[in-house]
Length: 120
Image (cartoon, rainbow, N blue to C red; front, top):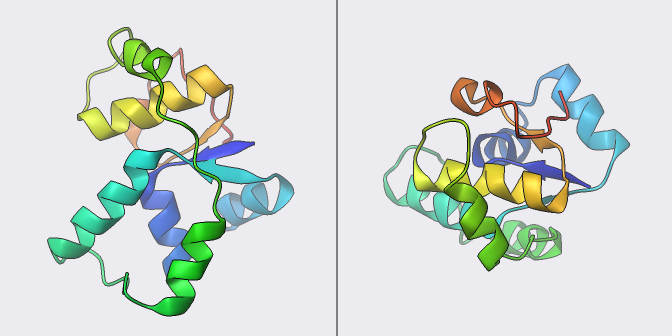
């Protein structure tokens, strides 16, 4: 199973995935870290995305997305990552490592990691 970061989920919801991202997501099942839902709501509250989180269809879609558990192991991995970023990105990356779920991200700081498995 793949792990999508927040910006990839937003691109998916807005229909702005690249061809390669779309191809990768179509090939394998995918899920998200729980922090992605928080980031989605935060970005909307800040006006940085226009996704309507009150849309009933979107809420139903979001409920069908598997969410990886946030565990003590994931939290501990955040302290051992080989890159610096905000806590949400660290949780997303640590989730990919712990659950061996290749990450789909555009984030160059995360992509510089040698620890995180990537789908692209």
